[in-house]
Amino acid sequence: MRAEDEQVAVFDAAGRMTGAAPRGGVYRDGIWHGATGVLVRSGDGERVYLHRRSPEKLVFPHCYDCWAGGVIGPGETPDDAAARELEEELGISDVPLTPTDRFTFDDGRLRYHVFGYEVAWDGPVRHQPEEVVWGGWVTLDALRALLDDPVRWPFAADGRAGIGRWFAAHDRAAPDRATYDRRDRA
Figure 1 (cartoon, rainbow, N blue to C red):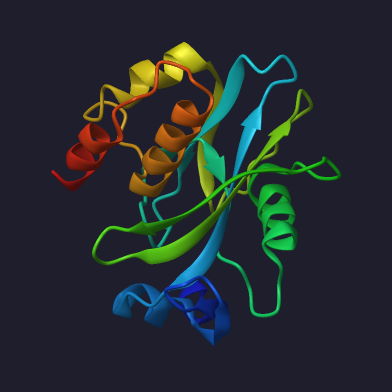
Figure 2: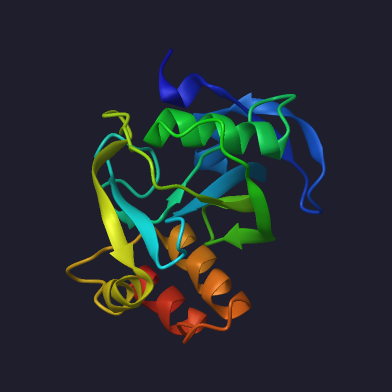
């Protein structure tokens, strides 16, 4: 099945699941849907796993991101979707997911409810080649520096929004979300 034809859970603007529609139409028509993001941190909490999205991705191709995740399927819970996506993209399974944040992402064309999680992981990472073309561990300080250099390190806009919120919630030299939002739209 083509990615565009995959059924995804459709949500209303308030965040209630209301049905399903093909992914291609959801993206094309700016339909509210749900998606998950999982921040993979080292066991000591000082590093995060950064990866580059494949050129085949329907949204934010070629961009860097520190969140493994994707759309919620019809009838799937956010917890189940997060665990599935983490295993599909990075080969990480059977690890406790800790919910971190829930917010909306709306850049004028892509509109969805984000269900954020994090995990602690020091084991192997196995990329799904259709989704991830590169990955590696970076310190939190290095991640902040990468976010400050959007020309050399183009970051997925939703991932940038999510990590800005995460930094702010964890009281760590939080990036200015408004600055990052402007950079991603340029």
